[in-house]
Structure formats: C-alpha cells, structure tokens
Image 1 (cartoon, rainbow, N blue to C red):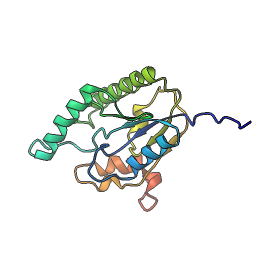
Image 2: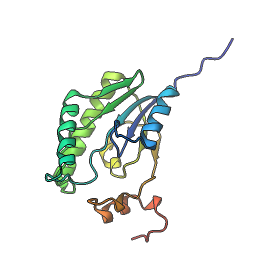
Image 3: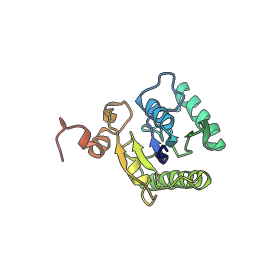
Length: 176
C-alpha cells in the first residue's frame, strides 16, 4: 500500500510584479510551480516600490486597474493559486503613518483571505524587502527572501532605504 504524502502546505508570495505583466519573471513562474506541486499560493502583487506619477498615463491606468482589482478581492487563477491586488496608498509610502496604515491594510487582507481559505502558518516567499514589517504578527512557517533585483537601481525608488533592507543580497555594497 502506497504511503499518502501530506500536502506541501500554504505559501504567501510577495511579488514586485503584477500577475498579468506582459512578460513573466521568476515571481510568476515560482508561484505557478509551487501551485503545480500542491502548495496553496496567495500571490500578492506589488504594493508599489515607487510613487506613481500623475503625469504618466501608464501609472494612472495602473492605479485605476489596481483600484478595480483591489475592490474585487483575491481572484483565483487556478484551484490552488489566487492573486491579491492590495489596496494600499501609493503616495508618501516612506511616511511613518502611511507606512503603518499600508501594513495594516495588507495584514487585514491577508488575514481575511487566510481565514476564508484556511491557510495556516504559510511559508512566506518574498521578493520585496519591505514585507517583513507588514507580516509581523502573522503566524507563519519558513521565510524565503528571494533577492534577484537591485531595487535601489530602479528609477523612483529610494536607493538608500532599499539597499539597507537588502544588504544581504548585495555583497558588493558597503555596509553601514
């Protein structure tokens, strides 16, 4: 008689890209592969690493799309994979009050999803160095910080704040 293997578990994956970006990167591929292997995955789209420009048509379109998707809640992509477009304030993210508010909004959305779908102590897989504070207080399993991008090199991102958080990923940078 073959021994039945338990399901791998649950995963919260914090991405720096939207699920339906025209070109998939490792974030979407990892989420998809984890789901194929039996994990229940909540793919949390980027909470915004830079402040959007109101003069940019692309940024305005993305803001409207995010508002629409955020109001609908997590959307299923397949049986064990959902995508959450968190409704956070995209402006003044470095301000302590905005930061705490955004973290609270994100925690609440994750807890609501977890209760509804029975996620328990999920593995946290993050591409985003700022997510550690946002998940404080959430019961979780292992933590994977998949550092593949030099976020400080992206125009509009506070490079100093970014590399201090992800210094372990950038051995060529000086430590402070």
